[in-house]
Image 1 (spheres, rainbow, N blue to C red):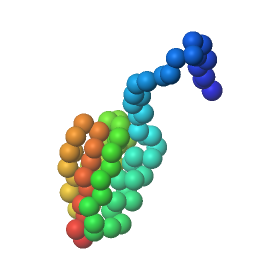
Image 2 (spheres, helix red, strand yellow; image 1 turned 90 degrees about the vertical axis):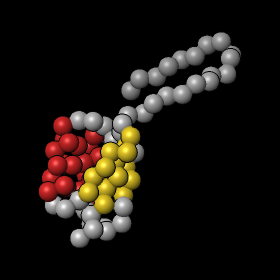
Image 3 (cartoon, rainbow, N blue to C red; image 1 turned 120 degrees about the horizontal axis):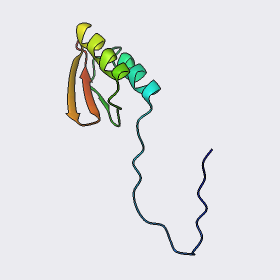
Length: 78
């Protein structure tokens, strides 16, 4: 595990982007098929597993909208 040692006594400020977990994203897409309510997923990585799972979900009747670069809106009415 990586760790950083900071010397200097100054407070740290800033932002860090955390990438989405690739193994969780496609499972969450599959789980969204179990409800007729709209599901919003944020921080979704743009990888082939997610694209394949999204394609399968669409073929099963899910409406998939990409609302931002790493955000999906999924609705399965039936």
